[in-house]
Amino acid sequence: MNGIEHIVRELGRQRARNAYYRDCYALFKLLQDLTEQASHELQSIYTSDGSRPAYAVHRIVWKLQNQVSSLIEQACEAQATCEELCPVDRIFSAREVLEPIRRLYSDANTAALGRHAIRDKTDQVEARPIKASKSGGG
Image 1 (cartoon, rainbow, N blue to C red):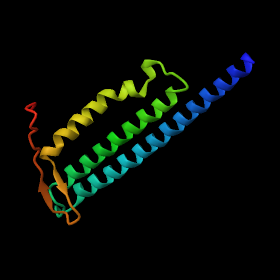
Image 2 (tube, one colour; image 1 turned 135 degrees about the vertical axis):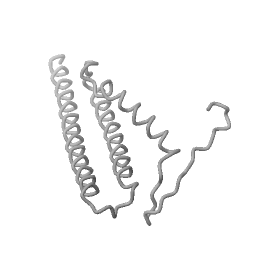
Image 3 (spheres, rainbow, N blue to C red; image 1 turned 135 degrees about the horizontal axis):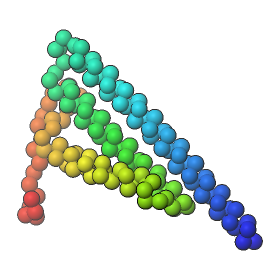
């Protein structure tokens, strides 16, 4: 019976690893597509006759940053699911490797709320300042 348990556990671990690798591949493919799309948009602005609004570059970069941040979160969630069945060495951990990037994007997104323009459906820009908290902490 012990041999069968071991085989079943190993099959579960392998399935979890395979699912994790599929998720990672899908995320990297999506990252590649998003980067290519942003590159084309930036190239279009570069070669345009100046008719595009000045904030267009910032909007493209900010959108890509948010998408990358979302992909990082998805990669970490996929690894967390995999680690339930198959622990990963710290040096190979996506969560460990991506944590500094997660903090960078998290800090950048928090700061961006106060200074970035938020575009509505009519391409008008509205600045939205950060309101100070009443807790006295900042």
